[in-house]
Amino acid sequence: MTAPLPRALRVACYHPGALNEHSPLTDLERHEVSLAQHQLTDFRAMNLFRMVAARVIPGSVIDVGCGGGGMVAWLLEHGHDARGIDMSASTVRAAQRFLEGRGLDGSRIENVALEELIADGQHCDNVVSMDVIEHIEDDVGAFAKLVELTRVGGRLVITVPAMMALWSERDVAMKHYRRYAPAELRALAERHPLRIEELRYWNMLGAPPTYLKQKLSRKALDESFRYGKQSLGARMLRSGLSTWFRLVENNIRPPLGLTLIMSATRLS
Image (tube, rainbow, N blue to C red; front, side):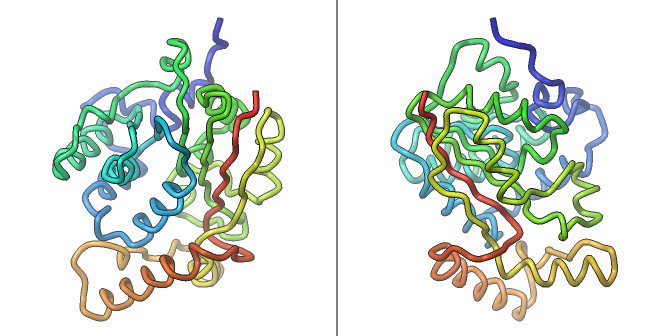
């Protein structure tokens, strides 16, 4: 019998109020709905999708806590059998619209809990979970469920925000419990029969300005330049940064960064 899932994970690691369509949106939901509208112009999202997609193995892929659906769309458009789940009804609707706008099947995104898939005995060749477990107080239990959904021999790919020194008001608004050090993410994996294939920082360029902004003003860095219609200068900056990620940072192992990426294979 499947053990009861922690309440935080029963809402797909996000928001208990999201099941009620008339509930006010949380800051996190507003962020995800907005992201669904801007994913095609967000250089950070597009380059992170490339990083994650390069680490999946052939077979089925599920994005747990899929947010705006961009990762699922990227995978589908590159020939993968991909789907996503999220328990925020508003986020799921936005993600479904995003897929449909790309000519993809919106039903690939479902408003369902991870616990239901595990109770049904489902396993996936690849389990992806991007910027999710930091929202859960019991990240040990959440991580265990992600491993359980991964088939033996399958791949688990996780991204999390890195470096507690970068903690800011944005983390508070997004309901984060923590940012991670590599040793902390490794410790979660070592509780399970996993072989870590890679554990690395990503987004090195974003770390210094984020740190300085947080220390000087105690406020989060304005990231609106990442997406949407912007001035010529902002568009040039975005283009330059996108090129940096695609040609340089995605191909090296930086010593620090805003994000940690871990890929691991389930051994038994």
